[in-house]
Length: 418
Image 1 (cartoon, one colour):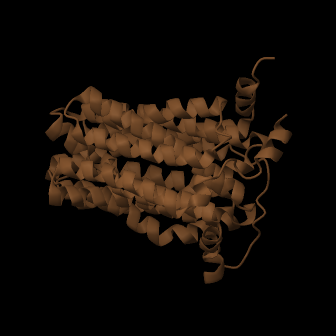
Image 2 (tube, rainbow, N blue to C red):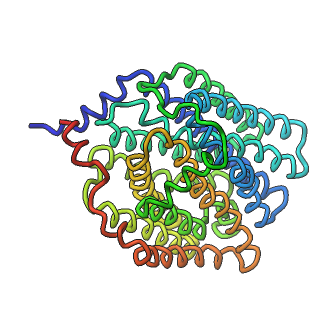
């Protein structure tokens, strides 16, 4: 009999709300990726400072860190679809503000950082709702494939966005920001058409320190979940070389914004190819080792990137990093969502988002500071070596994760999917 996997994946796209959600997420991500390329090149062009490249990440992470636990509670109390809609509208406002600032003749970078603080605030509320809503959009038996399909479409935008952003930047940053605002407007319209398949069962638990910290207590009580999300935090925190790509493109590869777009695209290519494989061949056995292997591949790619002065090799290294990160993200997302009751899924997703945000934005800040201290290339190499060291250490600290063979409830899900 033919493999039913393609038919199951296609059946998800026949559900209107799930399709609207995917399209909204793709267009929103496409816009954000284009915006990130423009901001990175614009800031480096204005100041020439590696530290300022790191401050781009810090400006987004600081409000994210302050608001994320509240955002997780909000995702459990209120309609996650509406939260995502409002966050996309706020991102639309950020794109419009960046366009207006650039159009008026931007000479200093602090207004850009101010807009990024607003963007980081919106992202704080959007991430827990986005992570928690997917299981409310599809039947339980389709969840694993929905995760892979969602990741695959997400990385299509991650691939296309940087290239478009880099090419359009040749016409000026205001062109990029104008198109970003337009894409986010369409994304808002699509998200308004989305409806959830199942209702949240989080109720209206009063806001208190006890309820806000419920997600953190849950994560601490589950060594597998704690090990998975903390591995991502500490590995990517020290391997956040993507913040330095504008400097690598200009000062090491001696290229322009078009090459920066290609460099920003390359991790998405590796991740998209990997997620496409996972959509049809999901990981079902030795899930712990797969996760550690993905993080190790990310570290290895970072080391290669630090040694490269040739654009094709740098692109290949970044593609390896994207592939390794995709495997890690897939396993972590499955573990967190399948281990967590829906009533606290938003708050647990918020804790997960703190770790992700710290590893990404705070990692970018760490890379900028390290590059300012030790130099551009040594900072990238050091980050890759430390990532490999963290992977080895976590295999010893969390043996239960290393030995984990199947996802929670895998047998029951297989039975329902037949």
